[in-house]
Length: 106
Ligand code: FES
Image (cartoon, rainbow, N blue to C red):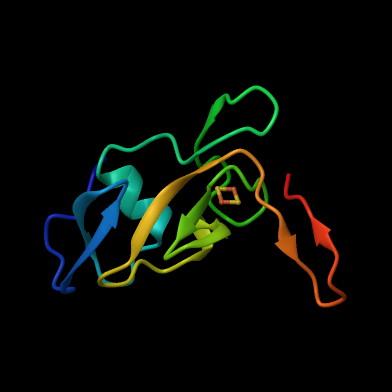
């Protein structure tokens, strides 16, 4: 991926599937992963088909990942932070709602 040659922002170190990667402070997590050559962020719940970012603006939910143990996080809407630990999301993960019920994600 093309990156602006002159960028004075500090580097940020984060982990994806156990691999330490470098990003620029202020990048979204999706942009940082794509810039590092990663295209698959999750697997679909039914077929396990690989999915990666499509819209990059919070609409498609194809960029869902697990961040620091929390599932269902949109990588395109999340700023990459130093020390962040990211994993692919495998299928649907339930999230609890305020009333104690659980709902599955797309
Ligand atoms: S890429 Fe579409 S919601 Fe993140």
